[in-house]
Length: 140
Image (tube, rainbow, N blue to C red; front, side, top):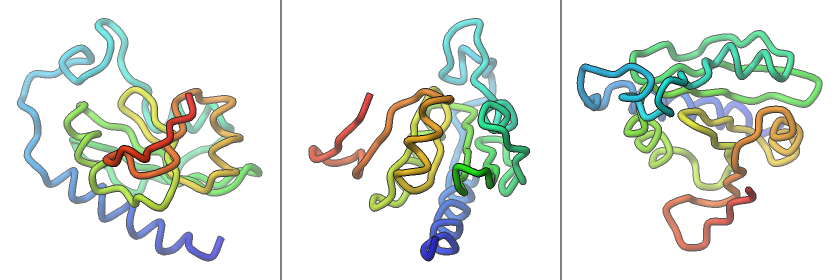
């Protein structure tokens, strides 16, 4: 993947920007963090385990965690968020030219072929273009 170093840098910078942004407040169990009542969102490790990977944690902050994985399917980043506001901030800073696999308080960033394979096991929606424009195509 020739753009992988650039992709990694963008993910890390976006993660750090979201981690440094003001949080949504102090209370926040799973329901307060934007998850379904009574159900905690999955961790980086849980998502990675579903696809046979032990992630190398790249960002470990209060608002988000990012792990790098390499499997036979390919290379990718898994990011989980403590709140919907944190996820929204990350999505706003995410590269618009790369597809994202997006779930409840998590996202996976990689190339389209890798995301198609991962989606079979993780679920989520595939965002193929910039989510901020009307041209966004979500494969659900």
